Image 1 (cartoon, rainbow, N blue to C red):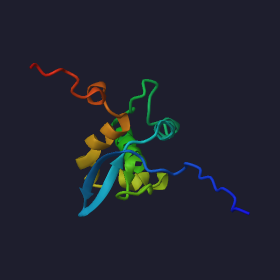
Image 2 (cartoon, rainbow, N blue to C red; image 1 turned 90 degrees about the vertical axis):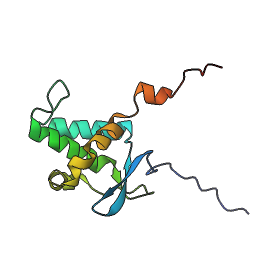
Image 3 (cartoon, rainbow, N blue to C red; image 1 turned 180 degrees about the vertical axis):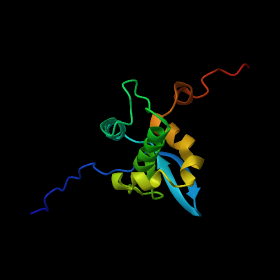
Length: 127
C-alpha cells in the first residue's frame, strides 16, 4: 500500500517583498499586505476612533497610530513569513524613532503599486 497523499493548505505564506530596510543595525523586510490584512488595519483604526468617514485619520495622533498599525502589519523578519510585531505592540511602535524614517516606505507598501509602477515602461523605443 502506498502512503496517503498529504495536502498542504496555503496559509501563512510569505508576502511580496516591498523593500528590505535596516533599523537600529538589523535588517527587516517591509512586505505588501494582503487585502484581508489591509481591511484588518482599517477596521482596527475605525474601531479605535482614529479614522473618520472619509477614511482619513481624525488628527495627527491618529495618523501616527495608523502608521504604527501599518508597521505591525508590514514589517517581517527577513525572508520569512513571521511578523516582527503584533497588534499589542502598536502603541510602543508609535513611539519608535525609526518609524519616521520608514513611514513613506510603509505607506507605499500598504497602498500597493501605482498604475504607473504596475504598468512599467510601456513606451516603445524609437528605432
